[in-house]
Length: 121
Image (cartoon, rainbow, N blue to C red):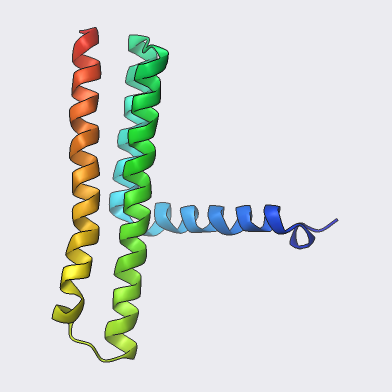
C-alpha cells in the first residue's frame, strides 16, 4: 500500500515537509529548536518534575508554533506584495504583529525557563 492512499499519513508527510523547510531555510527556527533542545537537556540534568516538564514543553511548542505562523504570514505578505503590487508598507503592520507574537511567546518562555532553572540551583 502506497502512502498516497492513506490521507492521514499523507498529511503527516506534508507536515514533516514543512518542518524540514523551516529547519533548512529559517535561521530563527533553527535557533529556537536548538534553544528548546538545550532546555530539554538542562531539564534532564536538573531532574524536572512533571509540572515543570509540562511547562517547558508547552513553551517550546508555543515558540516553535509562533515562528511557524510568523513565517506563513511573512510568505503570504511577500506574495501579496508581488502579485498585487502592494507596497511593503501596506503589509508592514501584519508582519510586525506576527513577529510580535513570536517575541511575546519567547520572552515568556525565557522567563519561565529562568524561574524553573533557578528553582533547582
